[in-house]
Image 1 (cartoon, rainbow, N blue to C red):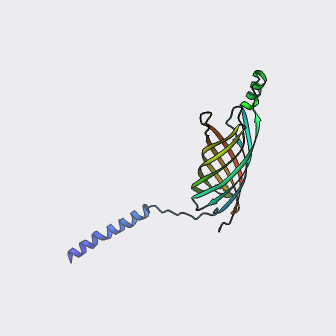
Image 2: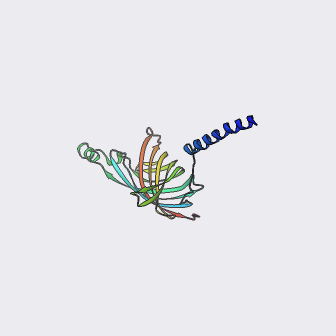
Image 3: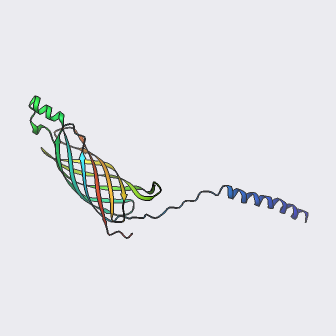
Length: 206
């Protein structure tokens, strides 16, 4: 009997201490919410620029279609754009002062391509404690064929994108892409594109 009382006296404080520790250190609890908006068939209309070349600046319009397999992966099946070029001051000076022939400068006229998209981050944020915006980021990799002034050239591209959702149908995309262009006549060179798009989503279940 004495041993039983002794065990009870030891057990009661231990249980109390365990409860206090559980209250002070509740452990980690994770809650992952479902996406408010899901993408399915995406049609985009965009405008952008080709800002990297020192002799001209390209401004382009582009359309594309993207199929979203899951919340994390998508295939931008096809995209095509037409570019309009504006001469820079450096080019005008070279043509005026040194008689450089305009055809020497290669300009992007239009381009077509396809990309794979990986969308690892999705979240929401409060804006001034008055509204909530939903957003996601994506990485893309693909191939592009550029039509330059002097012919066609293939390219491999890598990029980063950001999307803000307005509702389940309308969202807005910003893509920044670096295209590595290959040519038999010269070393590989880069064509960077920055594009802002209006995206329309069709066929989503939510």
